[in-house]
Image 1: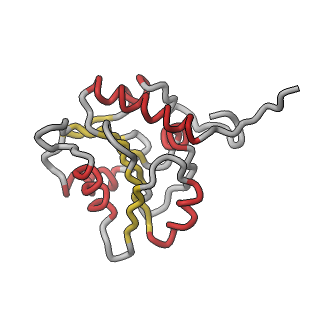
Image 2 (image 1 turned 30 degrees about the vertical axis):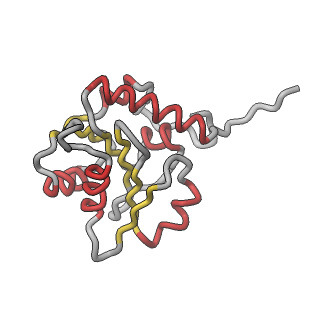
Length: 165
């Protein structure tokens, strides 16, 4: 008898991100920025609580995810991150938004060769969006819900703890 598992493989997360990347190209987005929430859990498997310290992932239309997180959380985050190894830490006297904007630039978002539209997940708090927007005002920001839905992401409810994602 085959044993059932609720474990989701790293390959499954890569497939989910690839599906989102295809949808981003279709919708003309250069990237999607996620804060902790249902979309981050479904696409990457990372379940993280929100705090005053920004923890985010930039999912570009091309290339690997860019993770941005507080320096003191790096070791714990590395244990949880299964998709992408580009982890950019920020210290208390740094700007996490600068790390996010640099990640967007490094993935070609807003460059002459790539789209300058960025999807912001509804789970993202306004101060995170505002911090990004102030540092990259020439980018076009839109809600990410439509592209997330097109990629099969259900953002209406958080996945059950221990359940299939």
